[in-house]
Image (cartoon, rainbow, N blue to C red):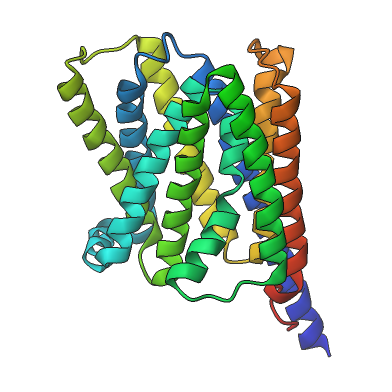
Length: 308
């Protein structure tokens, strides 16, 4: 009896550790949106910003793996395989579409679109991995697509539909990354993210060369891009550690913190951005948030680990 109580206590402690780490990841990521809003001429320096952000993400994860696994961490690249390459490239383009979404439409639209990632991941897993789709997932998708339609209509009316499209592509990119990891769970996740950071930087350099832009950008933008990359990498590390102890459904709910908090940071006067979302955008975003919450609650029973 004592051993069982000790096991239950140990599980409880690990659960709360996972909860706090996942919560911290969402909160850290939420500061990415206001960071971009502080850029100088953000519509000119997207590729430059992406170059520095990608390098920062890859560098921090290399340092983390050196600390965690030592110099032998490079052997993980041998185990990446096709799933790691697909996941890394998809994540790289998700990084890219996020920046372009933020510079072509409101932060609220881009962030709410990212909130649909768990649902798109579920649909892709059903199509390509033949995973079962629960009724809660189908209902959540229908509600979410209604919210997506509302925001598409709003952005079409305001002439920022391209930004909405970038947000949609960002969500799909993240979804492909998530499904690639479920395709082969033994794929080194951190190594895949390093590939994403490097791919993002190399593609950004290529686009700068093709467009004939200058190679430099204001020092303020460089520092902001490095700060943003630090947010991304730190959040990913927190999330990966917390994922060991927290059921999937709880992760889906906690992922909404990035969306809601990011919208608030760009809205609240304290940050000096004062970006007020339109009523239709809020209605659409509210539908998406409700759909994710409904999905998480509807699948929670199946995702909780068995009692020890």
